[in-house]
Amino acid sequence: LLGRTSKLAEKARRAYLAEDNLWKNYNFEVELDSLKNNFKTLNITADNIFDPKNMQAYSKLLGRKVTRDDPIFDRVVDISPDGRFLTLGNQGVRLEGDKLLETFYENMAAQITKHNIPNYEYVGEFIKGLRKLPLGTFVAFPAEIIRTGYNTIQRGLRELQVEGFKQTGMRRLAGVATTAAVVPAGLVEFGKSLADMTDDDMRALRTFVPSWSENGLLMPISKDEKTGNAKPCSNCLEV
Image (tube, rainbow, N blue to C red; front, side, top):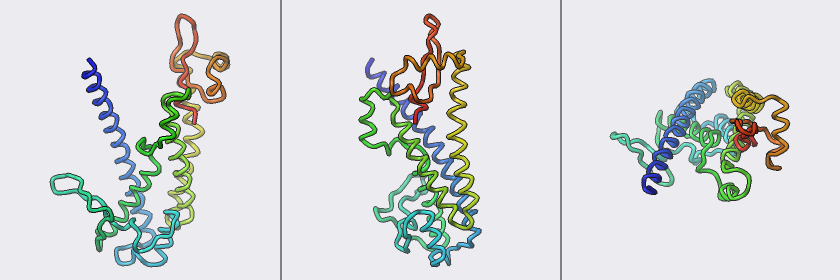
């Protein structure tokens, strides 16, 4: 029985990771396309990729001084003819011409995806240890939302400083503001409709939830038909 349970858990984990990776890949392609369009306005080519003016733009976007030796220009992985990923060494490989330009674009898009999309591989030991405390079992989710939210705002502010990227930066910051304001409130209202709860019921709910949840956003997920009490899902909204 334990063997079957462990196999089912592993299949569920693989299915979750597959879906998670699908969205990361989608975001990578969107960011890659956006970067190419934005850099075209700066007239960046394989011939002038290392021009001082262009290097200043890269430095503003990455938040660090970029030199010709920066790993952002190196290809670390590649795909073999049979479709497998190949690691090209710890230091990567410096290509030339259009392949150098394409590698630079891909590395930039990969960095945005890494910093702006939730990835539970980046959750530290401290956050993992919080699962042992009475804070809910999904502490990794709000931790990643905080990390990626901060990174998204930081990226948007950097893009506002670079000609050709200002519209992208404004859209990115507007998206953060909209998500922070609209999505949590929408989920609460959706939960209220599912549990058939009123505003008075929600106020009553706060009188018996744990102290660490009473000031957070509470999304009711169901109502006990015998007692009439709601079952809240607080840890999915408290960030």
